[in-house]
Image 1 (cartoon, rainbow, N blue to C red):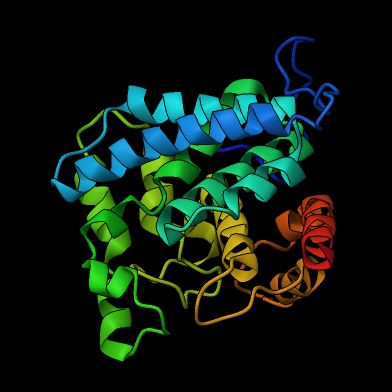
Image 2 (cartoon, rainbow, N blue to C red):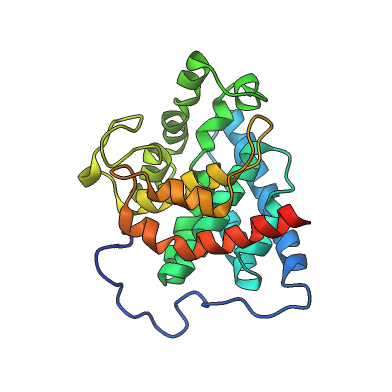
Length: 266
């Protein structure tokens, strides 16, 4: 898929080609449908990571099916309902991948992307941390901050992920997300130290969702930031993330913020 442009509006899609701007109403806000879809998406994600731990790459059809479940759930409910269910997961890596996938699908709707572009973006979000399947569990599930040596191992996950997926008929833009989602516009990221002109739009989109998701996640060693505080921090990352995309992400952050506030008050 060509990466969606953020410099100019996309051409108007056919009436049935774009994502619905809002999900249909449901008696429980769509949460029952979301819970069922998330359970199916987590099953697909478990299979993907099990293959990764065995040193085998998931077929593109498997990842695409998982992305369709995420997109379908977001068409039935909204990002608030998605987060409310995903935050109940105990496995931090699964929670993060599903959280980022939901944010990506919601962001795609916000940007008015066509349905296929949304699916590709969501599929890239599901796969972006696949390399973590090859990271030792003692590091991956450590209930405290990683030390310098452990962080060096953790930072190998983009390369590990791309090594698994190469030669599996994944689009180049999707492979770029797996390898480059920790790159920064100023060249301070990893693994390749890319600069702004070398970072495709699809990578930039996922990076915004990935950083924001990490900031609002609940971990044993840190409290999650509020939606507003996380967005303020993201907006303050001048020179590292795409400012136009950060501005466009604001409605998603506001929706997430209301979800966190409701959960805290409960």
